[in-house]
Length: 306
Length: 309
Image (tube, rainbow over all chains, first blue to last red; front, top):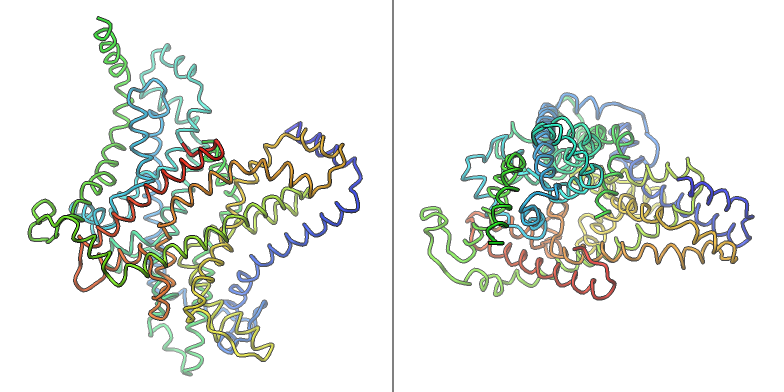
């Protein structure tokens, strides 16, 4: 960090040449354009969600709400299916993530110990699943044999351990916990269980934060594939499946729109509802993401060490 | 004598660490049940599976299921669609994060830099369903932004989501939109490890910023870029099921049916479920994918001394 600073200040002392100033200006403009390209679709969606159904259907919304209205949000608020999906997703994300993180940690710690006989073979057995799998149907048959089809377990148990997450956890343990520390605990008479609980777990907090985020967002909250193949019962559907029905398959409960007399307005409400739903569905992750993004970045960094 | 001593030594080390094996037990059971049992179950690709006989009771049919796929009219389009979509994504998605990282690396202003990072990472955290939902709304011929802009200009709004010719472009470029920022993270990390002395020396020698990018930054990124390229080339057959499936419609099926969606439909969606046929196609994809990863990694090691393992 110190060398970084001195380098910065050295550069600052040198007057930028004419060519470099032109370059920096075009560079900044490029970044502004890129940022706008990312932002514009998002601004449009948010603007449309706060517009009136008439403005939406007439295609009058661009980058600012037209005829400000909260009708879309009010309609969603009464949509039971959406809230049920929300609750289910919270359930799967919460318990699933606990299961994933616990399994990953108890697998990674032994595998990070240089003195464990067989660690290479076992680590390879995990990594191999990143390169090859039995496939969709054989996995489905196992889940069916275990009687997990159409149960909440099917959303949690099969996710287990992500090989990439296991790798970064092993790397983390190997690079941050000196073998001398474990040796010292052993000399003090601590068993491996005791060492794991009292020495390793407290030191593992940063990697637990990273794993929690990776699993919660990537494995649970944002996915629908597991639910698509394993669940039949509507009451068990996570939010993403409900979103798929409404946003993609266009199936909106007609009773939701019944209050609106005019056919055109009803059509408009249908689209308005989608805009609002996109905003509501992305909100939880979008709100917490700025606070936790550094953990994601950290996880990516540990991963790139390997 | 020596081997006997070694063996008892080995036993001693295993026994001394027995609690570590206890910790590993649960993850290992999970691994066997949910990852390796399906690999064993993939043998139904070589049988004619029927629920009445079960997995191990169904008759062997050799390679019949594979032959059926090779001879099926679906074979060619499914393979071509998968490869085209993969390579298009790879070619479009590979260089842009590198350019973004190089560009961001030139920015000294903290606030500007972190704002650009924050905004460009954001789409990564939006779910696939919402992204595709956004595409449908955004490109909607009546309510979309493209429609509103066309209205302003007095043009007819295009219906891109219903146009099979546009499917690949929409799929790939929306992916670039979503992932560029997040993919740049790793390159930014590598750039921050480049020795500042190199830049200082170059400045003293009168190198312009562009020259320093060309002769210091890009060579510094190359090893990482190679490894990532290898990884993605090995995965060309694995197109995100989630996104393709959501974007599919009867209109664009001719260009949007890929191996993963076909396997799903044959196995779990069609009126007559064909577990064996579906498993055979999936297995074929898995084996070819495995060979690809190994081959490409081998090539990378010979070319650059950088390999994944």
